[in-house]
Image (cartoon, rainbow, N blue to C red; front, side, top):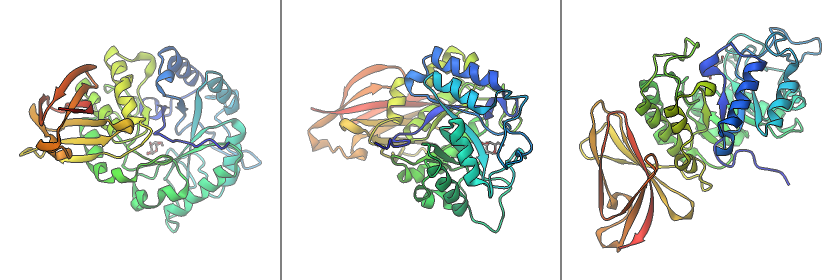
Length: 381
Ligand code: GLA
């Protein structure tokens, strides 16, 4: 039977944020090894995605894309085989324009050839970018094209559309056949970038669903300003900010694509990325979007609430201000009136701690740029 691609948000690792154009076969092998040794694969991180700069500057005489022979001396099929042997999946990158963003050959007018090539190599995921695109063509046509080419390639290949949220992408992308869609300009390793993306995408929650997800861009968790990518490296964030970043991406159904060097993760970074409670929210099979509840007299704080399969609710308290704040959830704001006869039992997903049953109101102090995420079960009073 045909297996559905991306029933829940895809999870994996991508080379761009940290390694930029400094990618090669050994790096990919070491990352694949680390994914398994650190147990990231068991948590659901399965795609190893090679971003831009893997290509040769020219196509071959048959018009096919070729891997850079210095970076990938054995070719891409060899790399894909290694990754598959580890039980992981492999992703690659191309662009709907004539050139990629880093000026390598793009797939414009080569879509069907390239999709076939990727299928022959054993590729499972294609990130498809938006640079050097003929201005006379709208993006929907170009993404429809590659989607059809992949669907005709003979292999299940996830299409990760990356056109930065242009042309109201959320309105048409699901019907293109793509599985994820970038909705913002590139994330940078800074709190402002994280906060801006999250604010902007709160109103697009209804467009997530099995088979097609709003990609809020790759995670910067754990990068701490050590990227060699000058476009991404904005000095880094605190662990509190990275924790909030991860919690937002989980609550908001974003793909979870790690961007740090997992071979050198700090214990704090590993704890953030490996939080089973938050991953379970991100991967919840019902794939509901969350809704926002305002915090009284505090425009820099908000609460996100999301129904989960099995009757539980995920509840996130987020404080975007520069000072600590008390955040209160009045249960009537999520539909529980005083007279309902029921209360909520809270589990703190970050502290991994049962908080017991609470009636009517929960107030928590949340540090600056921090968050709290709870899993709630409805119980009789
Ligand atoms: C664009 C994308 C990035 C990255 C680079 C590669 O900027 O949005 O995520 O893939 O191109 O050149």
